[in-house]
Length: 240
Image (cartoon, rainbow, N blue to C red; front, side, top):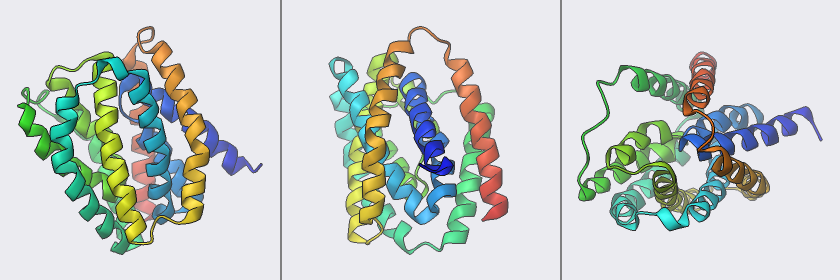
């Protein structure tokens, strides 16, 4: 087994654990490693498959705390826009897409520190717009968890309810993206196999994260996530 594959496996485990603790950040941690190993065009479909499995496991581990009303309204906006974004991803030129990904990762960190405060509590039907905007961006850029999370938190979801509900909404988004990637021939058999192979690692990481979510401070995990985002964002922006 090559050092590159070992790095991907270890990062997938860490990413799943972080996402299960903080509710976001897993995709952002894993994406730069996948891009380095497989390139942008393959990395985002691989990430989508792996994240689909990881998020599904978080739904199961928090199944008794889900808010299905939020997921339902989110899906109304998510399904059509995730599909459109997936088709556009297939046609996007690689170099600008890589630079755009770098800018997006850097802005994610800046947004977390510079935003005036958490958004007001969104109305339930407001999740239609949340689903539409962030599903479209996710189809193009792979990771929108840090930007999407504040809306679920502002609605009043906490701990298991927040993590499980956000994960189920993300599952809806990822399934739609994969359909679009398949229609556009971006989701190759190799990408599907790699994503599925990472699935069990994501599940184990999610299980570990569920165990420690109430025991360790989130701040340390968030600091690690932001450090990775800054380094990866700068690398994508300069090297795209």
